[in-house]
Length: 202
Image 1 (cartoon, one colour):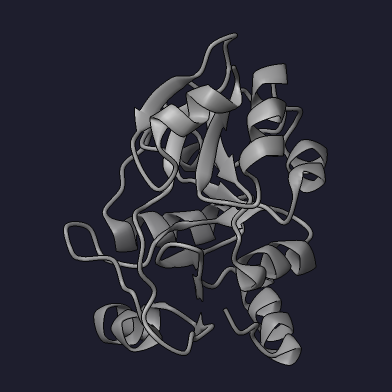
Image 2 (cartoon, one colour; image 1 turned 90 degrees about the vertical axis):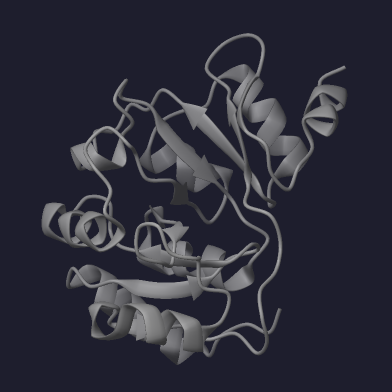
């Protein structure tokens, strides 16, 4: 994946700081980023997506250090899985210490986070100095965007900036694993097979 121009990434950070929405390529499809600490930005994102309170919104971080410094420590199981699969399309659900905008949390207060392979996604979170949202770039019930043009066609001016990608993104969504207990719990099958997750812990 060709990295975005550094100046454009800095512009994207300014958009996030001002409460705007940025579309960016992940290692699966395009994601929508807002600052999960800004209530107005999260409200705009949820309206765009048609998401309700308690659904939760997945976050993307630059690295494990950012997850634990900004959100709180993973469980021993979470750290083991992060060490094996990050960067990559494995999302971990954990019990955070940080309290973000309520809509970012699931109904039980948990958070979902991953560190992707995408250089642009990691760099955007790094420059923002905090994990960013990673919900797919589409309106509720519509097909997630796989190109910058699809983002613009479907979401228009509601997205302030699109970090484009030369080509079409493909791939299954990330696998979601609840890592709060001693044993992992599969919440959504995806790019990382469940067998692979289990084998990594053997």
